[in-house]
Length: 144
Image 1: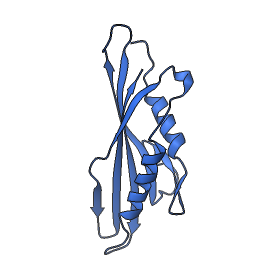
Image 2 (image 1 turned 30 degrees about the horizontal axis):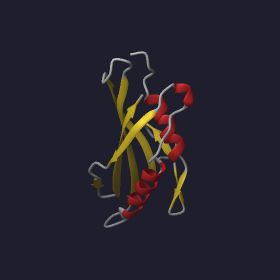
Image 3 (image 1 turned 180 degrees about the vertical axis):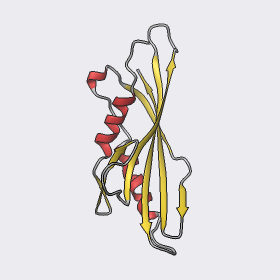
């Protein structure tokens, strides 16, 4: 296949769409595969796993079927019933809207034919010192 791997172009499009979005009056940072900095924030988005498969559906050119997983993370320190999943829900809603119609950098030579969003199961982690609520958005692409 002569087409570029779409990973970096997909990440760039997502990052540009969701980094520093404001949800409920709070600015949400986006990170690529890991959180960086001296202080880990209590809420953020992270672009995690990506997959690609070459699609040989016609003899003229190959295409990519790709997917990416976006992790929405919120954490509340304290004991008992601190925090709520509502903030994570609101962040997911904002990310869903911001990534609904992505385009790739023209320099990539790639274009998105279609994209589909899905929402895998939430994860909730409760400890003696914090409550963590995570939501996920998977975006699947067909790219020429």
